[in-house]
Amino acid sequence: FFGFPELLIPDPDEPPLIKGWIPFIGKALEFGKDAHGFLEKHKRKYGDVFTVQIAGKYMTFIMNPLLYPSIIKQGRQLDFHEFTDKVAPVTFGYPPVLGNTFHGLWEQIKRSFQLLQGDHLEPLTESMMGNLMLVFRQDHLDRAGDWRSGGLYEFCSSVMFEATFLTIYGKPASGVRHRGMDDLRRDFNKFDSMFPFLIAQIPIWLLGRTKAIRQKLISYFLPQKMSRWSNTSQFIQRRSELFEQHDKLKDVDKAAHHFAILWASVGNTLPATFWATYFLVSQPQALKVVRQEILDVLRDDGVEFDASRDVLLSKEQLDKLIFLESSINESLRLSSASMNIRVAQEDFSLRLDNDRSVGVRKGDVIALYPQSLHLDPEIYEEPQTFRFDRFVQDGREKTDFFKDGQKLRYYLMPFGSGSSMCPGRYFAINEIKQFVSLLLLYFDLQLEDGQNRPRLDSSRAGLGILLPSSDVRFRYRLRAD
Ligand code: HEM
Image (cartoon, rainbow, N blue to C red; front, side):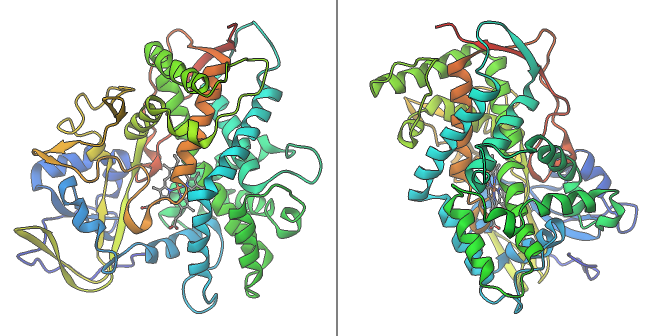
């Protein structure tokens, strides 16, 4: 998407330029292997602003989080959407949205994101609760007493995938669960493993069976199928309606848009749910505090938890779970590696702080890489350690974190920033809270012996929450009390 850049002529106010020794590929290989290590190494050598040639693109990294606000507030000159409209269509297989073909569609799509937030969260939360309960009841709450074992990633992702799917897209024409969910998830995982290559604009025909798998996934969402589903979220209903207003969108294009939302809604949520669950199960003391918090919030509202009955946690109750929220934030801090990208819309001088500006040319890419902020020992003591209460202070959410003695405006950024911030973030945190609450309420949980913390699989570095490099074996059984 970035095309071939013009040769950069060094300018006194341009940041240091780091080139690889292989033309074009530049530093891409090194970056791909360990983006965080790569950027930290260059920060030590070149300071907190430098330009790297990656796969034919020139990207300027802003490494000091105190400078983030000056990038994030530059909504007009540093745009994000030009990037998404080039990358997302080739990745998910729909025609570009910006431009004259689909007049007004872009704005309509943006407006539809409001249906994931504010008052709309209530019905989504309620529906998610019912769907999680349904899947838990039918698949996991059917046998009392004995320990069962399984892979924790497999467990978390199968439940969350299906419950999220039912909440967003609705129920099938007959029955309460869609048939073929495991197959759909298997295909989704295959597509997901190719996702980094598609985002990097590698032509899909070079990626084995990826195109056929994507077609199969897209065909799941053809309008004639979706119109038979019920309890579909307002968000998806609105999107279907607005796609109908554009004659030039073919049925498969509409389906491809719906498929893109499947990726957005579970691609990060599944690994995020895994990490939150894993860290709590690996620290029994933390798990105990969080479980007690959930029981207390229920009790405060006059509900004694009873494992033989379905439990219901309202949005208001979920908001009170600050230790659980802190645990989720802490696991997002440890597993997120998304890159925030902006493309310069014109030549201009970007003011970084009181005494520093850098020259930016039209088409230049400016990148923030919050993983380096998340793992900065000056901001987060012992940054590799999971501390479930890191984001709690005096019984409230802790929001003050410092660098060089200054309070940080941005200290946790798994959901991006500014104009490109994830519109599903509130729903995502809520559904992870719901899943973990049900798991802790209904089950005793243990890691199997010898199960160490898995490494982060860096193949998705830059694109969101990283998956574990391998699954973790765990045991679970219905709680007796
Ligand atoms: C975009 C993270 C869950 C819907 C994004 C972006 C990030 C992100 C980093 C891109 C922002 C940028 O580039 O600056 C996450 C994480 C999640 C999550 C970490 C879970 C833990 C969800 C859910 C939904 C959702 C559950 C929907 C139900 C979207 C959409 C976009 C997006 C539609 C594109 C926004 C646009 O085009 O402007 N998300 N997300 N996300 N996310 Fe999420």
